[in-house]
Length: 485
Image (cartoon, rainbow, N blue to C red):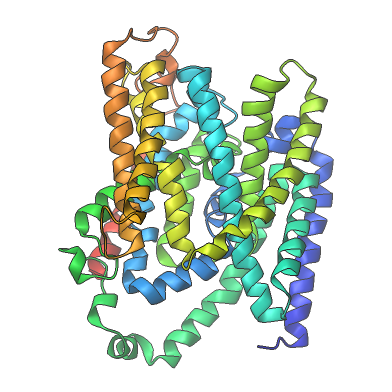
């Protein structure tokens, strides 16, 4: 493949644009909150686009294309049942907990709700996960550059890492978010015509149906048994494993995404951010090159600075000190991501690997968040040991699968069941230990549990409410599932 001069100019312009954005936004960074949280000042349209673009990195270019070839229309489950209900739940129910309690990160909510043990464990596991996820995006980007430009894998990794670390180091979260908006526009302009031309070359939808087996052309028709579809999983594994455990854990507790909503200038805008992102997400899978990697880096530097360094290593320092640490964490996080990009070479499918990481670090912990937000009796002891049990359950299931003690027709099915094992173990242990040990102080956790939040603001007409808008998104989701049944 050879690129024309105009293609090379576009790539060069893009690199220059993201760097200039970082230099411009550097002037707005006055303290650590500006650098790590954008001062909670961004408009809804910006946070909404960034929320979706942060989930559309180079991983989707490689991973979702590979999934389309491997699983066919079943790939839609990652965009529909594996995303939309959870995005609605985040906007309607969970964002008020994060925003009104002024937590600076998702792990910090666990510190307020439970204790330092749960906070530190979640922060550490999240930091590890972001570095691994960033490595996936970096690997996928390097493969694209190697294919399109002829660059070596090592050179591609270093160039992409260098650009990301510069603009993130300068402008922090704001730089990452505004570049995600730019990247989203490039996605639409660049990939939508390509998708249309590709479908036309295949003879349209009718021609595509003739070329592919029927099992690749439906989302639900062959989900009665794992033996009937490429996933190797039945409808229960998809709806509960992917649609509930993995999806809700990812969209509702992954700080990479929640951080974008937290940057909104009001609670109303924060709650609507995932709803704004949900509509275009249902309509097309496209992908940006660098947003996934930069998103992971900005999430990593926030968790490292606030949740680990400030909380346990060097408390009580000046804000200027923490701003300096945040910038250094940006460089360190990018360097670690370069190292983890080479781990991906051991896997033959990027999305299988990504879902495996999620089943280890996100899915088991969702039970802790769910119980903590909606059951007052949940206490710190139950939450901490429940999180450990959940991680152990997911990792144990994976080891049993690799040892041949349990069998599935596909790695993706193993990921779904692994997530369910971790979530179930965490739920059982958390509930059991919470009932066997003293209850938390009711006054201390009042605003951190459902029903104890302050008023969410002035009442709006029913058609302007977040709840009604969420219902509209849900109706569109159901319609698409029926259409492509």
